[in-house]
Amino acid sequence: MGSQESKPSNRPSEAAEHSGKPSSPNPPQHQTGLGGARTTTLFRAVNFELFVKPNKVVMAFGVISLTGCVVYVAYMNAIKENQKDKKMYEQYFEDGSTLMKPKKSKWE
Image 1 (cartoon, rainbow, N blue to C red):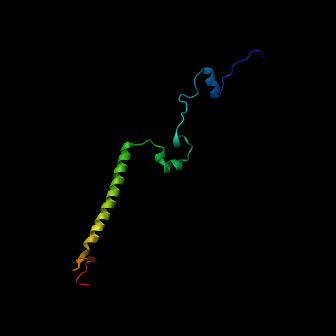
Image 2: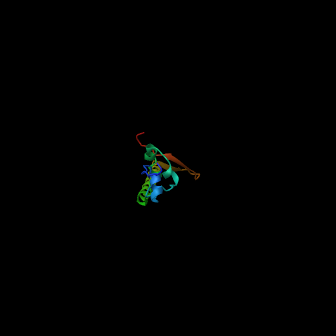
Image 3: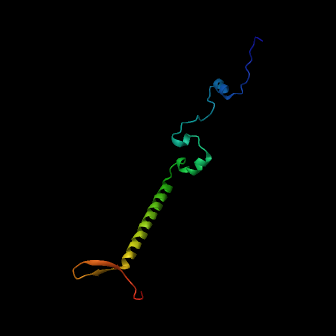
């Protein structure tokens, strides 16, 4: 009873203390932002842009696509305004005043 035998330890923390090596090869590093927060899978699926690295190719494609959509809407608006002007005519009076009137068909 006087001799103490060293028994192998099943706990990793004791094994690491005896061997002098850390228990894991890569200690956990602190992550900033939402990347280090505990979140649900649904939250990560819905808000995936918060958890992925920025991709410049995808970012450029998105900027070009959004710019193209804005230009297309502006173009369609300009075309509609120009078509409204084609359906109107300007009537001039002897006193120098003018009046914009819609064009009418001879059949009306």
